Image 1 (tube, rainbow, N blue to C red):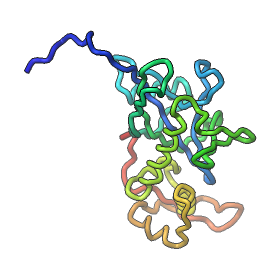
Image 2: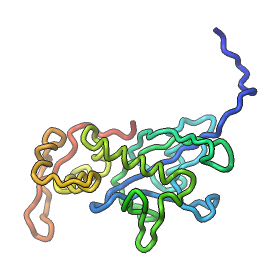
Image 3: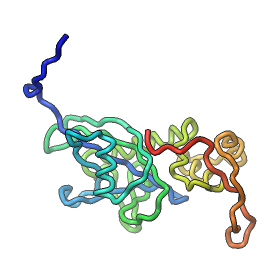
Image 4: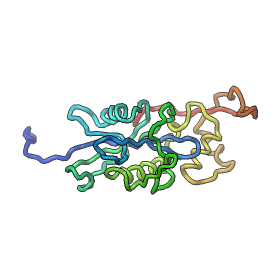
Length: 222
């Protein structure tokens, strides 16, 4: 059956992308926010409208570089958010991405995810539900995705340096899951990492630790 070539008679929504970019500072998960002029003082996620001639993932990387000065991160689609009232300007749906980095060269506008309700930066506290549009819920969903996939994916690798100590990996897993693995962690990680050597100097003159890296090849995006 031939399809009509005339699409002018169909109404259509506008499409945006939003990136939830997480990093771990060793004690808590942090998320990158921006405060563009169009949001009138509100904080929100980096993103923007998808051009007619660009893929959604390419738009995401372009907007993250342009608006958040971030590049070289891992990204996978989280889900599409299409509530009819999510944007008061009109019918706008967004494709949200879970993004991960271990890059600490940028220090601006990172907020600690202290709970499912609040973000903190020094003495500033932001309620998730006060963020632009439905960005608070998108952050909650992204954190849940990350936590749920820790043990059946390799997502944690993108929050760790290429070579890391087992204690750093354990702190990351325990922080995200709210668990304490004690001595079980090394046994559970045995088939997921490979030993690459010993660190060049111990912390504060202490014993040198074994360094590891992830056993599977690195991927830029999914």
